[in-house]
Length: 163
Image 1 (cartoon, one colour):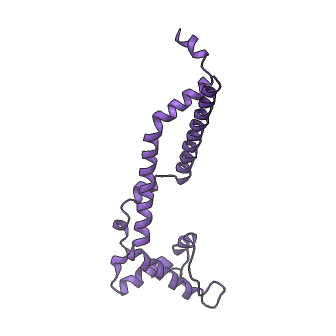
Image 2: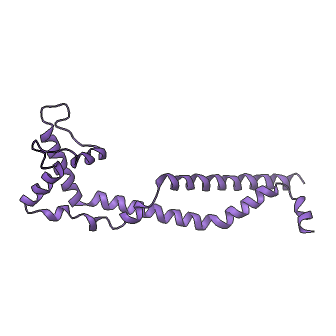
Image 3: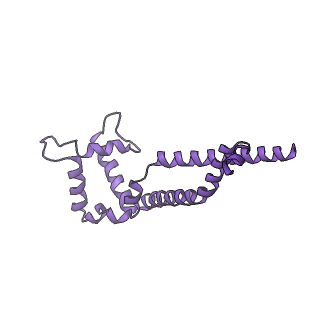
């Protein structure tokens, strides 16, 4: 009897999907908001870290010294990809990397504490497990589901008006 009556409902599949969206939307949105909050927190921690700023300024200064007289000299910044080269670029004798030199520079100034960055970004471990692409996909799915609800609501109103 139930399924017989269900057959007479217009757009029953869409209505079931709307009910599913209404049931799960609040929890999904709160979960997603929490994850975006973690990402924002990490970004604020990175942007506010004086230690990281000092390290990056030192990396830039050493890079500019190494590239002096070339088209890459006097750079105002660098890409994150170039940070990988800190362990690959070696001194003439091959015994020291640029990263070794940076550490020695901080040690010579008695500022090794600047290199201790693990406590600076408390939320980074959690954020590192997140995928922004996946989260944006969830946002698009939620948006599409809400739009489907709006469309069905309009169709239901139109059905009522045409009775």
